[in-house]
Length: 170
Image 1 (cartoon, rainbow, N blue to C red):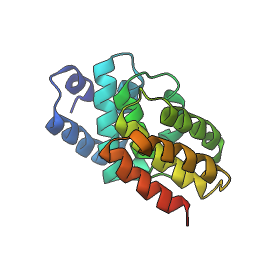
Image 2 (cartoon, one colour; image 1 turned 90 degrees about the vertical axis):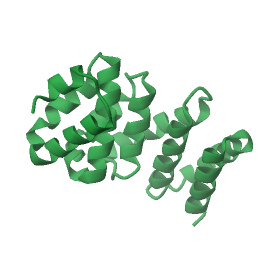
Image 3 (cartoon, rainbow, N blue to C red; image 1 turned 180 degrees about the vertical axis):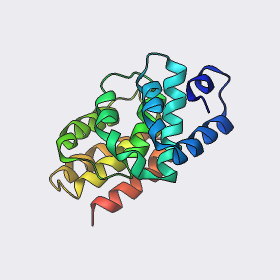
């Protein structure tokens, strides 16, 4: 399978699943997928982000060596799909200590930026709630931000906010 060619052709959900299945069998191709995720072509970045998220659901161990790279990429990418899928992946991972502070900054920035997509807000809440286990001092700040978001937020924000507030109150 030529992953590069698939990213240049018409891409759909079935193509994404096919790539993820292929990488499960050929983990050496993670570097090719990551190259598209970090690349300049917005459509390829978006598609690669979706494949990475799907792959994380299948075998999260394949993602581990790239967590730092993905967190660093949050600084560089304006693409909603990249932020959304990166945070979706990170909510299920143990974050290496050297990236935790940077990730906390990103997530609080996303939560206070009203221009961010609802899914970015939701995943950022969960990532921060998970990090509150390590840094309990963050709980109060997160609670205030989540309560503020819930005041005028969508049903999805209300739902995720309730779960996060319950999680950090324990």
